[in-house]
Length: 257
Image (cartoon, rainbow, N blue to C red; front, side, top):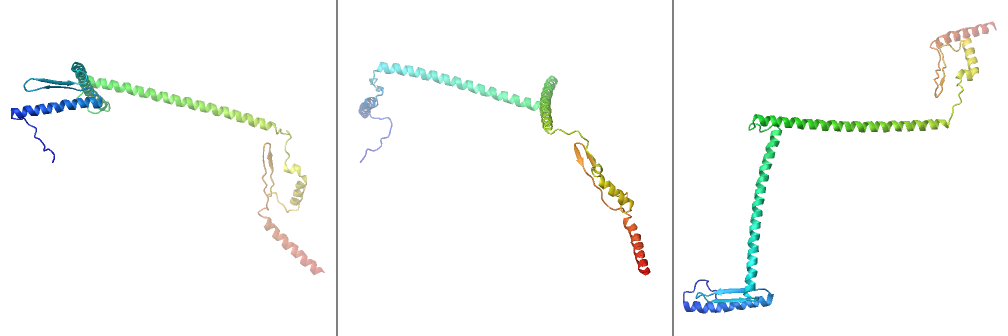
């Protein structure tokens, strides 16, 4: 069976306390030595009994270990002081930043025309001056942007004009490959006099009236032909009596035969 758990408390019996102290001290020193050997660590142990007797163990010398301990304790205390000081400074900076943020938020509200009840007359005048200066700056910036846009428009217009001049020059060069003869273009009636004679003959026999027109217009550089053909509106009315006269003459000739 395993050992039972021992309650940790002061041993009342002096003899038992002395025996237990001796055993535990020996075990503690043994464990310290094993720790130094196994893990190559610097181990030191200082024990004072209730009678005032000193028992110590050090793997590298007690003075050397104590000097190292003092240096480390001083450094640790200094580091702790530095950390504490830095923490206080950070806390102070955080408080200052919070105050500044609250102040900026208040100024922003005042610039937007809100929360003006706590402001004095001088503060209101200063706020008005700030708003006027800001408005002037906005107007100047707006005018600057407008002038830049106008300049860009002028540059685009100049480019367009140059492109138009280039295209016009190219068109003139292309026209140079097809020179014009310089002779006037004759009309349709001048080209075809036979048509004029036939028209006159038809009009003399009453077949074609002056209402029937034939117009032809040709212009240099742009030709268009317009031809109007048709019979006069009273052609059928005149034709009907002629047919009746022709039929009556045919009947009379048959009667004579």
